[in-house]
Length: 63
Image (cartoon, rainbow, N blue to C red; front, side, top):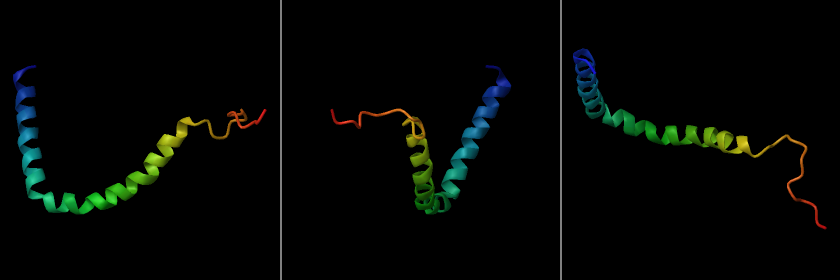
């Protein structure tokens, strides 16, 4: 890494620190809404690999 990358990383670290410390109340106030938004997204993501809509049997027959 060259010198400009280190300077950029240092600047981003300092900016991130001040962004989090100065706006902690706003970020923590949004957490419940982010959790509510995550519920349907995770539901769609987790059910994507179950093979819904395919016409194959999943062992539902009782022989």
